[in-house]
Image 1: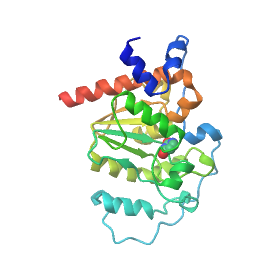
Image 2: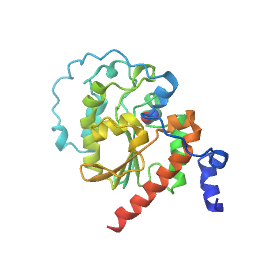
Image 3: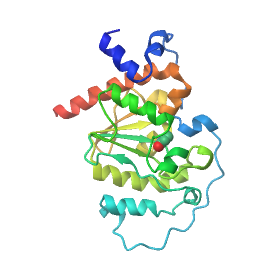
Image 4: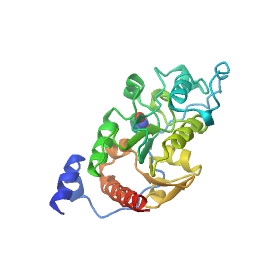
Length: 250
Ligand code: URA
C-alpha cells in the first residue's frame, strides 16, 4: 500500500480495515442501507395514504422553479404523510454549481432536527469518504436525499414516498446540472434509475441519469454496520474520481 493511500484511508477512519480484509466475498444482493434502516431493520410501514396536497400555490410549476421557490415548496410539502411527523423538510446542502451530486436515502433524526442532510454518524463517514477523494461538503459538492422528510422510526421510505418526492430531486438535478451523480444505497439508486437496483450488481458500472453519468455505491450507514465492505467502497470512490476526471476532459 502506498503511503499516500495510507493517509487517505486514515482520513476515512479505515486504515486497519483495508489491510485486514479477507479476499472479496460475493456481495449479497440489495445492500443499500439507510442510516436508519441500518439501525431499525427493514420494516416497512403500512402504505401511506396520500394526504391532499396543500392549497394550490401561487408559485411557478415545479419545472420552472428556481432554487428559492423549490426550497419554499419542499418546506411546505404535504404530498405524503411524512410531513405529519417531520420537524422540517431537508432539501439538500452544498454548492449549487457543484460538479458532484451525492444522493442518500432520507433524513434521520439529526438531519430532521438540523435541516441538513448527512450530519449524523453516517454523515461523518460520508465527509471522510469525500475527503478521501479530495472533496469537501459544500465545495463543488451538493448532497441531497431521495426523500426530503424523515421516515418515522428511520424506516426505509416506501416506493410511494420516493415516487411522490422524486420530482423535487429531479428539479434539483435540473438546476444543478452536475457532471456526476453518486447514488448512495439502494433507495437512492432505485429512485434515480427507476429500476429494481441491487447494489452488489450495480456498483462498478457507469449508469446514466438523463445523460448524466451515475455511479452506485454503498450507503455510509451500511458501511458503518458492515466495515468489511469499506474496501469495495474505496474501489467505488476511485471509480468516481476516475469518472469525474474523464468528464472534465471531455
Ligand atoms: N442517511 C441518509 O440517507 N440521508 C441523510 O441525510 C442522513 C442519513
